[in-house]
Length: 358
Image 1 (tube, rainbow, N blue to C red):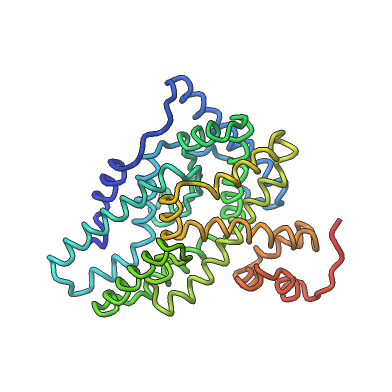
Image 2 (image 1 turned 90 degrees about the vertical axis):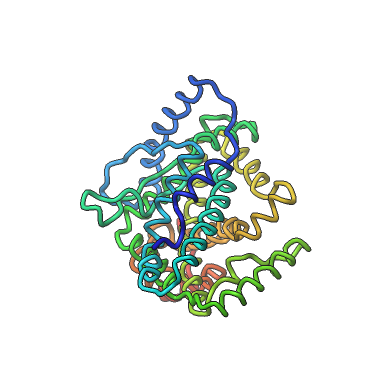
């Protein structure tokens, strides 16, 4: 059985997504070629600065349009949700409920992806593509060319500088997951545990739906709730805390690296950062409402909190001292430690009063 009608999700997403900016065929060709080239340039800068080297030869990024991003994410969701799909196959759910439910969720997933597809600049695909055995992902860096072109025009910044700046952030994620062998499997196992910890009986589902409607009403009134919080079981909340901590770390590390490397290779980095930060905080009221409901504002906070953690640790123990976070899952910071970096420094480095690193 299918938990989600994936074909419907793709069809819905590609139908609803807004078209990209108007560009000529030659402009599009040049943008794609430059993004591929800059992704390889950026990887060298990132590896040199972070001192993380997985021994993998740099590969150019995969460049997609908005419908291509939607298809790639559906492929990734198929992999992530396979444990839940397998459990559903063993359930006794009536066929009519299965058919209707999978189509409803397929439409909902497609609508969310259509909203996101015009906003995402790039991402590291943890679970795509599969290796030659078909059993394990090799990872892929994806850049959404229309969104990058749209953003650089909207911000009125130098296109070359902006594209390299974006590549620095996204390449940091590729370096993290290729240079830290256990990190990918750790994230995947936490996601699997999160999915399998769900409770899907009808009474619980109805209770969550009522709570979700309350959240929507609260957000419309200006509240800070989001739908992600109300659809979880208590066990899932515990797992999500760990996932949130590790994703705050990797996102913050990406932001820190792009700004630390930027001044030496991106002449207009200060202007780009200032304008991009204002863009992150802007948008129409409806746009802000949807972002809050989907938890996207939480991701924005992750950039800031994670970057502050990385900066505080590097200031105290240097980049090599910070890289102790990648030793094992036990050395990852908790959410409390991200908020108070001295707690992580005490636990991992064994002392509190540290001199500033040179």
